[in-house]
Length: 445
Ligand code: URA
Image 1 (cartoon, rainbow, N blue to C red):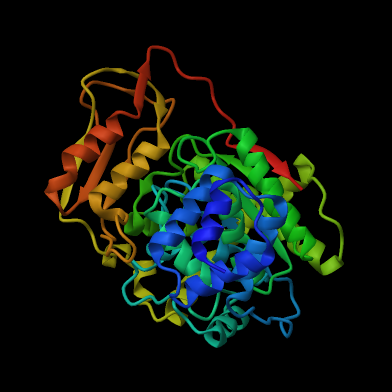
Image 2 (cartoon, rainbow, N blue to C red):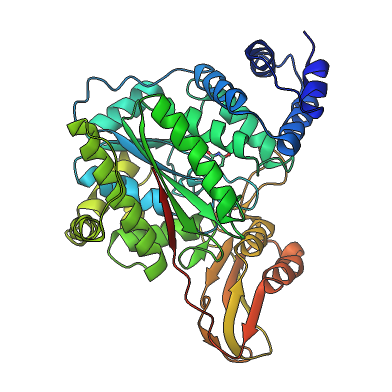
């Protein structure tokens, strides 16, 4: 068998067999297939897609490239959530301690920044000393003792995703339904969880730009999860503008700490509480061996108010402090967020016009943040944890000429002009306020 022939088959739209996909993944992991051939294969998948059979096989191969966490000795429900990638999306960092505070275990394998989107692992690594490359044993102990742990794919857990993810990040092959589905579901199936809530982002800042594509991705992942005995639900949420008020690793950790202390902008709060409500409900379904069904509005409200209680009592914040300590970080950071590195320079971004903000293109904000230093150009690049964007005004807000829409935080002057042009090309003003958009778009079960 040759990688060349497999690439050519995929290029020509012919379905690959399990043997061919197995060859590709195992030889890539043992460095017998180079990055340039795998990049070419990924591009062929991006262009031609995969059949359902290929997608499931790829997911299984990526899962079996590493170990599965055995959490059977933990008897309470184990659930997780995972986002398909957004801009300013810090919900995992808020939800993991919050759900753990409610006595549901959250063993989370998260990702780094991908394309213009941020990643939970990069964000957490802005906390001095914090490590996400734990052994399975340490991961398990933290889940048992604290209620949650957040780690990155390692050579032990989901190694195929670790390697493919960083290649996709720099080869413009991220926005592919089978590649996203296999990447996410292989990690989630490795966690040893019983329930999963997926946050499938839709809009300019998401990898799925239309509701139709987002539904297709959601359906693929929900079917894969359920077929493997994992109670899976997907919530489609709006990603046409950034979520919350910060974009960039350290800045987002600071916003997450405020959120865990009860201070959240409305959009972030709505997404956190909705996903959290579904996580608690799915955890109950796991315990009761019940089928997941759509939640009525009044049940959602009840769960959301319980979640708010756990934030307001300080329990979620306390869990976050324990987590930092257990993962070798300095827990003082939670009390003094200014210990997170700050950028040397801050620049106001504004426009000479006035009006209501009609659009704030989330992808462009994400790219601007990358250009300021928060993202990577090549696999393994170092990122600037202090760089990013603080958003002062959002869609629907009125701005006056030269009023700050956002503040850029950065250290390297070289890319400031490109970042500013990128950000501003995504801002549109109008004389009348835009229609209000729902942030929760649909639920796929
Ligand atoms: N999150 C992942 O883990 N993988 C993807 O491909 C996209 C988002």
